[in-house]
Amino acid sequence: MSTVNNKKTTIAYILLLVVLSITSIGALVRYNLSDKHLTHVDDLIPGLLKKNKNKPLKYTSIETLKSNIKYADHIAKSSTNAPGQFLLTGYFLNSYDSYKHFLQKSRFPSFLFSLLSNIIVILICKTLFNGIAIEAAAISLSILNFSWMHIIYSVQSNSYAVGVFFLLMLILLILRIDNIPKYLTSIIFFLIPFIILFQYQLLIFVISFGIVWFLRNLKKGFKDNKEIISPLFFISTSGLYVFQTYIRRVSGGGTTTWNIGPNQEFLFHLPSFNDILYYPIKFLIQNGIITHDAIVSPVETGSLLSYTISISILMLSFLGLLSLVKSQNSRLQFLGQFTITSLGIYIVFVLGSIFTLSPTRHNLILLSFSVFLTPIGLSHFIGFVRYRTKSVIFTFSYILLF
Image (cartoon, rainbow, N blue to C red; front, side, top):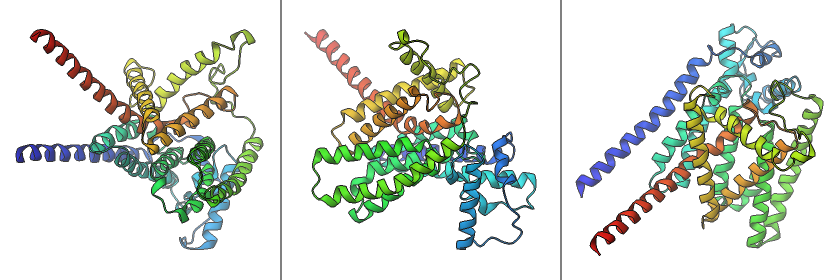
């Protein structure tokens, strides 16, 4: 018995070492690229708009906070980036920084949020998996840390890694919402819409969260009017403010054409009414595979190895989603319903030509779903194989005996 326990302990230590190695390698790769990665035009925006600050910053100063909020808002008005991405940037930059230090400092918030995402992933795996949390975390962290697109946008001043972080936070909230004290619910619901200000695509997931939460509680039956009125009041109040900010940004920023592809192949447009049945499906499958490959691939995209990895992850993710939907656990059902609703609204936005389905940074946020769905799908696939293997052995033995 002690030998078995020692073996399990050894395996657990090895897996823990693997998890630490994955996060360390991911952090080192990102840190090494923080001043070496190709400078994108958007990387220069924070520096061009930064006002002279030769005096030491007062990190607790209200004036400094107001100044950095205005600074972040100024950047957002001058680009297609959400203002929240730059709230921390102003604390680090100074006019006398060298070019190398400017790159490192302006990119630091992206790097920070990419590291914090590791913690959220570990907490999600700890909540989702009983007994195999370390194994699941190793898979999830591998997908997150070795995604080339995530690496790239973890070392740019326009932080699209922050979108992945906040969506993972929302997923963790879904899994733990039943354990949150009621007096905190209204505060949380008030704050949720403000994550949209960190990446505009988060609007879809905030809407999905609100819809699924409302329908879920409506089905259970609200015990108290305050249980529905209070959260809905706060989420609608803050949501309206954030939504009008989003609309103002989108309508005032003109149209973005660089992510639709050279032949507009990533922007949905129906060739003719006769194609209404098959073309949308063809568009979603074809561009969905290309986009997913770009998001999750740890190697050069478009290669045989890259497609093998990304399609495997995609299939396991679908299996994981199916198991969530079929689960009898209310938290897992909530997560499954949230995922389906989110992807459904995302598809509506794509088919409405509001979003492109392209291998570009705006879709990096979808990486969050692969991160937690893949280990769920893999665990169910392994369980299925084991069950089938036992069934085959039993049947074969029965035939031999009788």
